Amino acid sequence: MSIWSRISAAVSALASGAPLSDVFDRLRTPPERSVAFAIAVIALGAKLAKADGTVTRDEVRAFREVFLIPPEEEENAARVFNLARQDVAGFDLYAQRIAALFEGRQDVLRDLMEGLFHIATADGDYHEAENDVLVAVAEIFGIPDREFRSLRARFVADASPDPYDVLGVNPDMPVADIRKVWSRAVRDTHPDVMMARGVPEEAIRMAEQRLIAINRAWEQISG
Image (tube, rainbow, N blue to C red):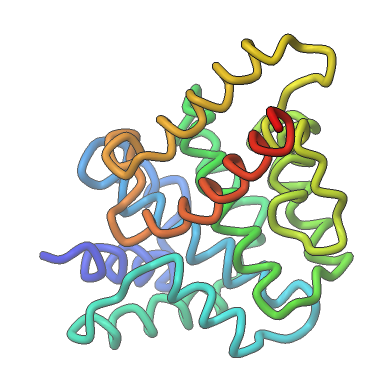
């Protein structure tokens, strides 16, 4: 049973009235955690795309860039995305279940936030309503304000891309210590490391933008 078939089954259960908590309780152990991660991106991404009132082709395309969808799974994937858009549960309920599912795994929650920023900025307009949703999700996930600013600086064109914010360090830190932070960030972005912490293979490509940003930030600081 492919990941998209398992995702489709889980989201169908939600759409048929199964309690959100029951569905996510069944996704607590590997390999189903990767399904839970995917559902989080789908459900939160679909609701985020509607936050500014419309779902654009660019936002749908961004979703497809986060998830590599094989041709034979496109029907399942489309069904899942449409179900997520129609579901009556609010984004905060999904965010709360995901926060509980990955409690103590801030690395996974940051990966998820990156996927949401990618979708939010896909149409070239980072709407205030989208920012409000992402701020609320970050608060539910327990992501500190500095880390949130770092994510926003990497994705939002009109946000000031302060290299220290991007790396999440203070300007008065010794360069040698900043280098260690940069090196750890590069290591944590490796596909094998991301898959080990529960990010499905289909979503690994969203790390490419992170790697570009953290390397650019280090070049600015060290140069």
